[in-house]
Length: 245
Image 1: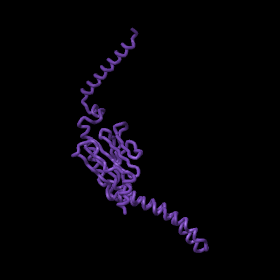
Image 2: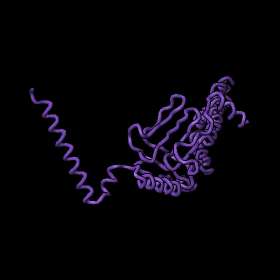
Image 3: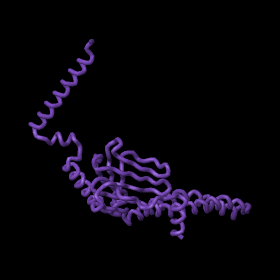
Image 4: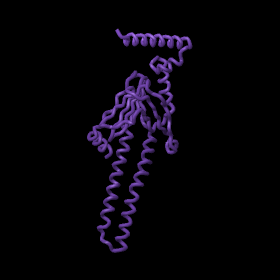
């Protein structure tokens, strides 16, 4: 039954096929998926939210049944709360199927130059980030995540056109933040990213300010002197243009 539901959702929602690797060397491509325990985590969250939603309707239905049995009320008073309870159960079951589909359609891809994250089924979000724009990589874990041995890896990027985000079906992106949610090897993935980020900078493709800070004192003085000469030439040219004929 779930397979039929998945196929129907893929057709109706036009869920894209598996994502293509982002720019980079094909041999360096690493594909990561959310861990099995992340699905268990999602099940716990679903169960708690479903219980909180169903409990009031269940209490109302039981109260109506008791009132009808003890007060000789018309049995029709049970119909409305029972209908609401059944509808909420149906919605909860559909929500559970969407939770599983969302887990299956989650992708994290890393190459030597960039990374790509895709998540969501009703709203599909896809984000591509180059290592040149990564500013910080951090790991977060809640109590339940620690118990299940999973974590979320957060990648903060610089603003601007360098962080390319692609959204489908008009989806809104979370600006400049990419999440690897529910992975069971977050430290290893972070180390891989940091290694490739260092390689990117060592190749001369990183931040020019960092390269200037790491240059020798004599090289820095040479650059400063050259910049002063350019500034002086630009000032002289401006004054010559502004001088009346």
